[in-house]
Length: 276
Image (tube, rainbow, N blue to C red):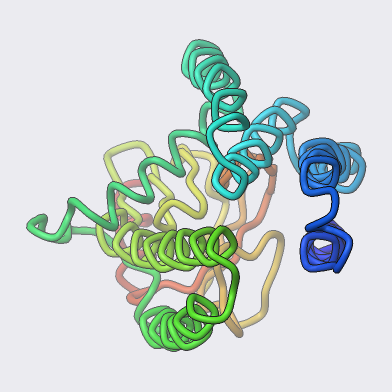
């Protein structure tokens, strides 16, 4: 939340600079100042407000820096875009080579777009979904209307560069929401002979050995970490020891109890009990 506020403050401040009366008098100087601010203040804020508090891995700062450079390239043109290319290539090479939290972040973002664009002929596999009772479809539909209602007028009132940036941002956000919803439909929770494959779309995932599940209780009282729960959960899993949970953008958490909002909680409890 604090990082989001810092990011909003930076964007508002830089927008004010670009819209000031002094900007046409010294465009190159102001452009350089804005690029410098975005490419340094945003990654630094991420490091101070997110990484140092243990909410993300230090390597994720590199990805935030690349995104800042890419945003400047989109608005200010080819020169900055050339700076972004080697950074992005280096980050992708290192991420996939290291299989670190950054690798998970890069893969998750690419996969989100893939789910949004190329999965419409795939049928939902058997498993236990987590989006119907929570009302994610209605929520994302409402968000889509809000995003479209905001983005279309902005495209006609903003200067050309900012209008293009706004269009890309709004389209990307719509695709992200669509991909997240498709992922929740196509990546349900499944139970194999010895393992609970916990999948909340691309939001959260974990591999939990069934032998490590101490109890699975149908309850609306949350315990431990709530995973993509809107309102009250309907199932709590208590574990014998903490397990690693992998979230979007390389986020990792540990928990010894997780609260879920499953569309068929009774069936999931039977599946867990039948394999333990």
